[in-house]
Image (cartoon, rainbow, N blue to C red; front, side, top):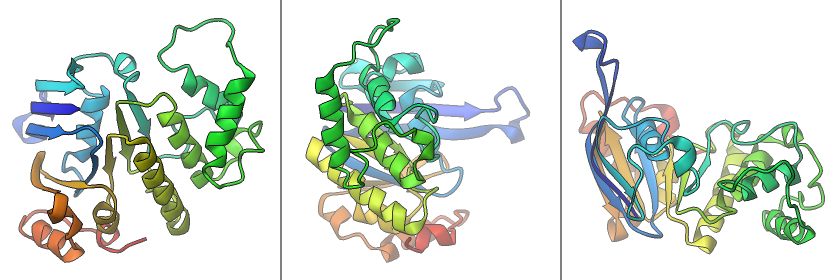
Length: 266
């Protein structure tokens, strides 16, 4: 599904050598169809840059990125967006706050299609949207005319998840999408996320700063450090992982910082 081969990305190349920041250092990884990969690492480890070179926010300096055998290495962000679904950390991103839930869903449905002066909205689509929103069990299916900006952070992230998968993306990218939520809401959104991914058999990459969540969710785990993947667990190894195991991996890196947030569960 996703093949990242020998990808390097550096910042501040035009500045002095001591200011050069190598965010990704010869990264190679193959993510198979249907895998749900959690990504963890300290601040500045390269995990966010990894997502950004996949979605096109950054173009790699070297290497190749293939998505379902399509070369997207240098493709503009808007062109590869047709293949991707993404949910950001900030609940305010990725949606139009002054538009209704229904209008946001319509825009998501039209992603990648030719823009016209008038939307060809059909009542059958409203029924589909209502059923999808109802599946969230948040009571929003009868409030489709409500503006997105009036929803709580958790409600908004849940709707954004629906928007991200409407057109069945080849790859779903979750960029610490519960980090800005309170613990109770974060748990609800994560459970919804897991349900949606399993039901739709979505190939997914989820960045998280929380070790417990990285272990609990997904069937594969990648740990980043200084722009490299230093640990790749899947199958039985992933199932049997514990926080103690991950701490041992972190502690083996002398300069890796471990925050309380990473260790303490929400």
